[in-house]
Length: 633
Image (cartoon, rainbow, N blue to C red; front, side):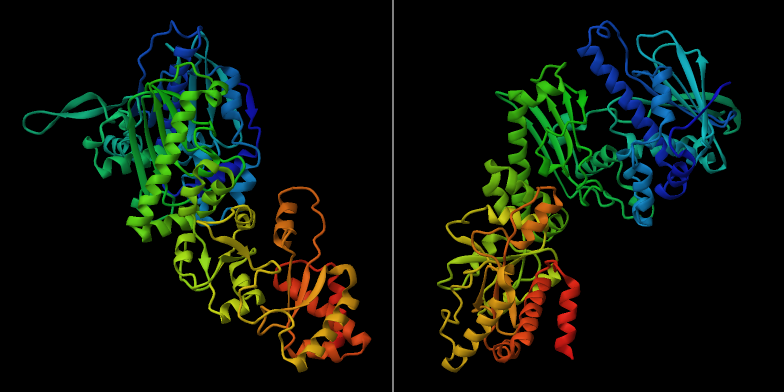
């Protein structure tokens, strides 16, 4: 029998899967049944959309067969099946490019999150946690030839011709000592009910079980063949018939979550979903949606190749689970189902994106989800704070991209604050504004702890004026483009002129005896810094620090410029900051009195320190260090 080598570093990857990625070996059965369901989904779709398959009649079926004598567990389906080439491509190549490197970098606790498996296409290989050998016999629908793929998972596999009646796939797992418990009917049935109860197709569990006579004595054996799952589309049932536990169990089977029941491994879904939204719409357009908000963010939330969480059905026929247009990108954390009565069964992905029915369902779904989140924020602030801790940033992306729902999103997003603990909204801030205050102030940057220590906040703190602390990268982009909130302008304290309301007075109102000192310091700083700065001014916002940097009102901030460079936005025009000096500070007084050489060192060190405090990079760190050393001597 010719042997083939796996196309990736299978030994290392299988070791990761078997010993690191799974904390509960029972997951292998969930993965095999899920694959069987997917295969049936594909054939059902082709049977209504492809002329070559429309004449094919089949009754969807998944069978799990226990053979104690042979020490095997078989998962069999009558779905689309695979030909020889597909067996080699699908089972001979493990995962997508970069998967091994990604898994190796995960911390141990993340590796044990079983929900990762489905996201990287390696679920089939979980069978090797309990198997010495796995045989896959498959016959593709519409063909006569069948093939068997065989491997012990140690680097090689074989493919040979086989016999199979009808299309579909049989996965035969030869159980090792670790998998002995799955020769027991009760163990297998428990796993199937836990993870696969809401698979849309009947799952028959087949085994030979002891038979007992009237006296309770063993009298041979009997074949037991029973459907063990609910096999119903839960979302199509009336809400009045469903209990919270029904939704939670469906969510866990739908997402592959919920392993926390067996030992606190911290996987997403341990506590069930945070919230669910079940809607049945009738009228111009008939459809049903069931959406879940996870308790924890998916691991690929910020990956460009994230896996969509919403499946599309038409009249209970699966269409796709790989369309990122079903909901806006900023709601990519939502899991669930859309089932339409009005879309054609043979709808293509290209048509989907242009389809008016789908556009209406999407718009209504977004409004419903955001409306439920708004209600949650009012009814249960603590639970909403937990949601914000996981999904605040995606909502902010919506502020930037979803103009139709911007007003609702403005009520949902949250920021930190210099005066309030926890999260705060723009409405909360506005309710706390001082009498006569004309703007909502915010400070943006890259690190919350550093922002809170920024010299730019000193006079705001002294005057008891609240400032929103915006520590996420996206804040700078979002807030700068928002415009007024309920008639109140938003102002960045990183910009010149934002301190106009502060009670220190206008420039030049400082003490007369300090005026000449301040003017001298400004003059010497301008001379030393030259075209490194746009201007040097006396500050009205500083009370403790000697200097700070701000940007002019029309210039992009230093943080925004760095952010655009990171995102590949090309070269932005150079921003020359404005240096503000605290005329009352001893170092500024020293600058005013210094000779030319010392004044140049002082001015450049003050400027460099101000840049560093705001998270900006120094153009010449060595020069800065040399000047600082001279001053220290």
